[in-house]
Image (tube, rainbow, N blue to C red; front, side):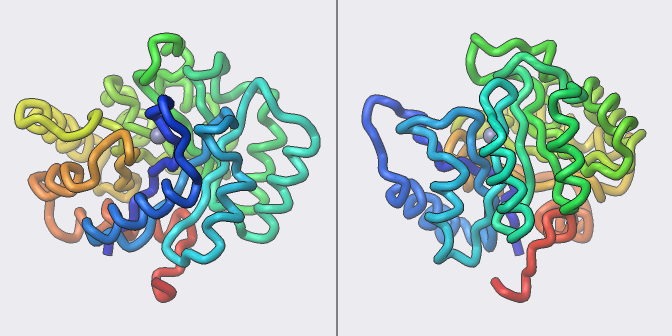
Length: 269
Ligand SMILES: [Zn+2]
């Protein structure tokens, strides 16, 4: 069983417009080719012809029992109608979490403007995910996406379940401390490469992830995710395979932690 907690159906090659159904077909095919049982699709903080809205994605995946949606939230652009829609989707179980993009947008995770969102996440018991570490775009401001700032939020909202995306790469040590210290903080290993791992980078990341587990203990907090289509699914599975971990620990990372955290009913898959 494998659950990928971090995929996108945004079109990152903006020289041509790709339909939402075409992107979903591509995701399904990639999942099939790599024996992925379930994926979460994270929507963007931006909505345009290349980045579908949460509403569009929620509608589009209705026929799929192996896909779930995590709703992207913009710090700069949301109004009361967006809040009503999100609360309605949470109530109906149409979205499985909220995703925030500090770094891409200029805010720290414990910003007071998100109090309402965090309270909704606690009430409906869904995790909040944070972009963390490097920004794909040079226009990002990385002081905001440093994983150390997740600690403030984790302490102020002990009931909030928080995911640090990309293990805060390259600040993996800071991420491991925040995860170790706060029982309500998780981390996903997505987006560590563009495309495929090179042998050299794979060896480097293997060491980093193994160190994290040595320090922070049993990987009850670690989640498998790829950031597909940015990272390649097959290359990611190969990366997982060469980690020096027991099968029980790999199972935690590959699906058990995610099924529990996102309440994914695996008997339906
Ligand atoms: Zn991502």
